[in-house]
Length: 501
Ligand SMILES: *Cc1c(COP(=O)(O)O)cnc(C)c1O
Image (cartoon, rainbow, N blue to C red; front, side):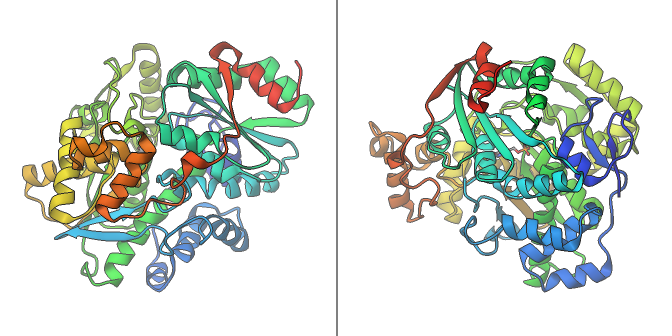
């Protein structure tokens, strides 16, 4: 299998090259030249396998330039008992008749980003070796919270890689900030940026485009790369858990042979739900993909009308990891749906860049409408859903997963469809514990307490243990206190690398 750019102006390359490069030079995303179908033999084989073994089977379809030994080393390095606190890795919990929650947050940072970012470093190092790369790799990340910490945990102490994370000084939660500034590892660097997330992201983009900066790095045998969700190496690990969940439901007898499912996903950058789409194309019988948004509901409108329009006010919500107006991975879906029409994609993406909006044709949006269903949840509805799910099902949802549950409920109300449904749960409730506590506890129980005290109160009240990666965060040593002006991020990077222009 080879990879090409969704915008068609890049020759086809191997998986290793696509993972190493991250984004195509023509601005497009790397896409596989076909989507493989899981063979009958592999379906039967995977029924008796562990999560890790299933991951090897699925990855092998896409990483044809990797040996099975290499894939196995990557997978076992990523998904093991040191990093994940549940041996099933991505367990399913039945919360109501035909409603299953897939918990994707048993990794080190308690968010689903770990599912991909625990594996990506292994894939990247193997890809670098395979392509004869001799330079050291410097990963730069701008984060609004979850990606930064998950990337730090994934890349810490990896040979010949350095990882640098920039977060907005006042734009992340106390838990998220603490998770990052207490990060250990001999190759990690974390800095706050005086500004908001856009400032941090623009700063990183500028560094990536700065030719004199790139030249300085090259003189010292260093090269930049990205751990951002547009890298194919981040999407691929996510296909695995949807396939695995389907097999789990078959094996446990909760689904009849070949019976279809719906999948509901709390969506931001469109990466997680796109992975479910690929799982469907590979042969998982999916009836509907339910795309759940918060007040930043660009995708709801797009899936309903075919008009993508980012010209609207950005809302700060209780589900901050979905506060996004440009869903980059949608480009890959359009590529698949249009039958690889790179010209149409290039035109739409150009319109998005210059006018902030584009409109796809009828055929395309009809096809999307046959597969997807979309709606959004306001903050009030999200809190109400956390409360109801706790009271009725005794299950504690985080704010992002609650968006998906809320939209799933609306779907059932609108369509009457009772197909068994998997809801992707993207974070532990303790990662966004303050908002969760406010949804289910009386105000007087939490008033006047800081975020860490509130987590303890929430844990005592619900009887649910706080995940190890969040517990005692307030007592860990702060190791990173660099603050960078937004104009000086490049200099901050050079200082950390001990380089001069
Ligand atoms: C990143 C994130 C999302 C959104 O996932 P996408 O792949 O960007 O759609 C949802 N929930 C949580 C907790 C996240 O960290």
